Length: 634
Image 1 (cartoon, rainbow, N blue to C red):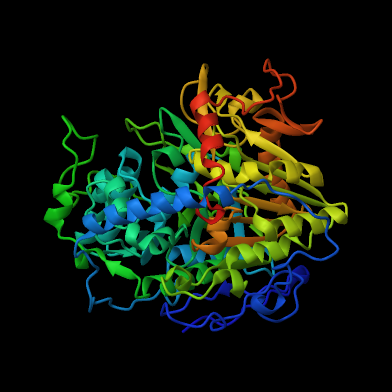
Image 2 (image 1 turned 180 degrees about the vertical axis):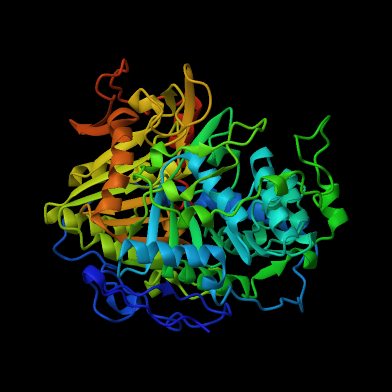
């Protein structure tokens, strides 16, 4: 049963949790719970989303598309690829009559140590708010927080991600997961199917462990030898292939959870020797976590969620393991061996119950290291985090958004991004947006036009062409760049090359110290790619989630986000982000009709008039693909 609206009355936040996910993928867009936004009247989004069409009073803007001339060539290319896909696909299809035992989140989280710790912490804070939050601003804390929650779980662990990559960092997480299962914790892992090919298919072996269930959401038929082959085999159903479950969360005992932009893999935790993603998560406790769990249950019990055993055998998964001279440490063929994690297990709930020490900001959090060849510590002391109790709401898409026969999400106006846009339209002073893939589209441009008319300052941090791990996404952003600047919107593009070690917001590359808690050796340079999805409005409302501000997140992918109304945590996020605007990004300017990338003040870099740090091949790619690429696929 879908959860009823949970109205938050503290501090004027009249938002209902948008846990509108439904049990079946073939339901009308108006069914399910209503989702309301701060300050909105008590009615569903679908009836209050007034920004679907640009207001007549908004100033006009122009976008350089040039798509009409490209149609014949694109149609010819599509026909050839479709024919190849049909030849490769053969008779592959998904199994029918799949058994999906229904299960739900822990009913009484207060029966677990974590649940009791949360209740005690709230009582000690003397708050009337039912949810607490701690910002996770660096890669090391992002990893150790997840490890701590896994080790603290006594009853259940629910893990939902778009991508889990098979590497040494995730193997350490899996060891802790297996140890939790061995002590009787029920593990449910829900993973989007798109990235489960090649080496990453080895993650699926967890499904054959005791007390661990693993389901794949919206799986693609055909082999898993490589991602490229999977794409070719499914080009005949490209619409379905494009619809992905992009939600990201980890919840322990239905009491404490973490969500944000990160997937699971070494590049998300600052451990890659190449490019590392710069991200922000939020730890959550209390009622908002139960809303996260209700959302998880609706995806888990949906017909689009397939148990791994219905798609592959353990031997078939093992056969996909790449042949290497020597596997990474701890990556044994038999995943049933938990290693020595049990000896290091401790319950983090005890720390949350202890007396509060002096508040320590997230970017200076000390950790408790365990001897290990990996530079990442094993766990962290959650009591040292600065927990903020505040009104909040959960924005989450229905699972039915992913179904191949789903109603038009553009017409429904009830997605996570629709809710975010409506929230943004209420800004009165300042809007700070961090979106790695930023393709506004007509509706978002209408929102920007409206708030700029009221004098609202809008700052956007996104990737440069060189720092973007998906250059095609930069194509869509580039189409709107001049129009955005013409509105007076301030654009900042992340520098790909950063001095020192840049693996987190507020890292040593920006501040001359170790504010970000980043790992690795100082000196030299490192490559960074922005991956955070954050909005701060008027210095009092913070949104952290999985969504990008682009058409893919709005129309195709399912997303999740937490809205927090509190000036302290909102300004903490601003303090994390602003040093990157000042020293880690180019400020894009419009001068005499042309673009100029202004180098950070005080840096030895020069201002440039072409995409900075990007190779000639990348710039050619941008010029060639620009006229052809549909925005909703970028």
